[in-house]
Image (spheres, rainbow, N blue to C red):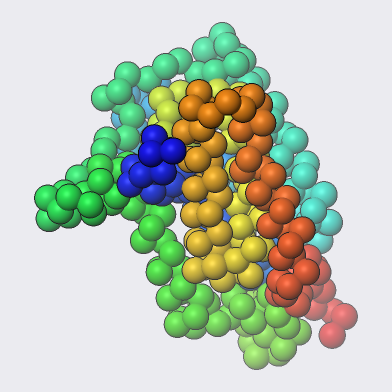
Length: 311
C-alpha cells in the first residue's frame, strides 16, 4: 500500500489532472455563455496532434504548444459558427466534431509521416521542459509536490484563479454569464449575445487545445491515435460535477486525476486484472454523474440558440 499512497501520488494527481483542468475551464467559458461544448474531446485531439506534428518539423515544443492553441481555436470556431450563426443543434455539432477528429489526425499523419497510428517519437530535448520553482524547490515536501512539472501544469493551476476573477470580477465575465442565463435581458441592456458566445466558445478551444498539447509534447513525446482516451468527456463531467464553477471544476478534476494516478500505480502491485484497474477513472465518472448530476443547476439558457427577432 505504501507503494501506492505516498507524496508522489499527489504530484502524479496534479500532472494527470492538468489536461482535464484546462478542458474543463474551457468548457466553463463556453457553457457559461450558453453554448454546450461537447466537442472538447475532438478539440483536445486536434491540439495534441498539431503540437506533436509541428514540433516534429520545427524541433521547438513552444511553437508546437502555440499552434495547438491555434488549432483548438479554429476547431472551436467551427463549433461556434455552426451553433451560434446557423443555430444548429449544439450537441449534434459537438458530436460531429468529436467523430471528425478521431479520423482527421490519422489521415494527416498518414500523409505526413506514413503512419496513421502515431507521429514520430520526439527526443526528450524537443518536448516541454520540467520547471523547478525557485525557493519551492528547496522545501522538502512542497518541492516534490509543486516543483519539477511541465510549464502547462503551472498554466493550468494559474488558470483557475484567473478564470474565477474573469467570470466573477470583470465586466466581461458578468456579460458572459448574463447571456448564458438570460440572453433577452442581456440583449436589451446592449450586450452582444452572439459576440459573447463566440468569445466563450473560442476561449474553450484555446484552453482545450492547450490541454491536448500537454498530452503529446508534455506528458508524452508523440501523438498516438485517440490518445485523449475520453478526457474531454471526463472534463465535461468534472464541469457538471463542479456546478459550472471554476473552483468546483478544479476540485473535480483533481479527483479524477487522483483516480487515474491510483489506477496506474495499482497495475502490477495488486492482484487485479489490469483491464479492471484501467476502468477505475471511467467508473468514477459514471458514479459521480449518477450521484450528483441531479443537484447541478446549469446556466438557464444553455443549449438554446438566441434569435433576436423573436423578442
